[in-house]
Image (cartoon, rainbow, N blue to C red; front, top):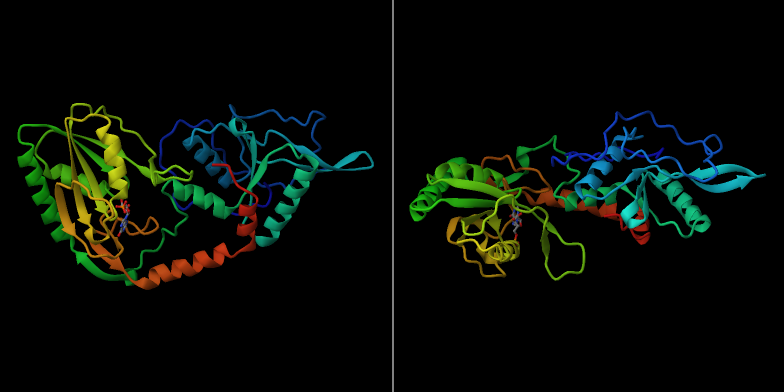
Length: 363
Ligand code: IMP
């Protein structure tokens, strides 16, 4: 990958997964001189999966980490495909960045720079003409960002958190702390003769769960679940992207959620938890946007009712930002308009359209 821009996400996936690769320092990029790097006759270059991989760009290391997250096996640049000969001499070859053996798929990462993407598309077209049986896809920065977003990460600018983006504060830090203390006391009284398992739905719940757990005086264990949007045609709107560490069979479970709006997410999670046969299953929601409810939920503990507006702070995010605000607030509409305009201009980019026409399937 000679012409890739920086695809690194602003936030690296913090999931501790035994790496199947060793992230190497980014080495200086050398645009492959096809004539100089003619592949051996069998076109195979030894896979380096188990050794130290010298990625040509940090984005490739990130992508390898992403594949590890999804438990997808990969080889880095295992094969060079000859593309063009002149007078019996190979003058052009193509070495896709990754091969995913389980999917029989080659993946090429590329840049957002239009001129370079166009060149890369041309090369891929040529590749498909010469090697029609080889499945290869181009992954643009936009596609890569979407993959990360599916994991709950976005290519966000984490350097700025302008106060001027905030329209109004709904609940102050003191109001939140007081209400959380009340909830803790109520829960402690209700579970006076029992221990319980608190299950939080990542990531927004982390602040609330940390505070609530310290306000509960009963013995308790903590576990987490995460949901991700489904990309297939299944009826369910979401899927669990993590599983519980604890066995909750016969336990008194209290599901903790930061905010519930339509109720779809919580309903989905509760159905799955019930199947694990806990002794009891109750729900505690800090912020309830009841006006938008689609599905009736058995919520036993509610912190606050909130109006029908998008809110951030105290764990709740907009594009991963604002979680660390100690209060709950509504952002100014310009914040979304700004992003919307940026997203639109990006979506209108020809490279994005073309990449998707190409049929990416490298999840
Ligand atoms: P539901 O499935 O519609 O109830 O949505 C629940 C999920 O949507 C929550 O877990 C939040 O992650 C997200 N969400 C809903 N409303 C807001 C909001 O106002 N701010 C931030 N996240 C929200």
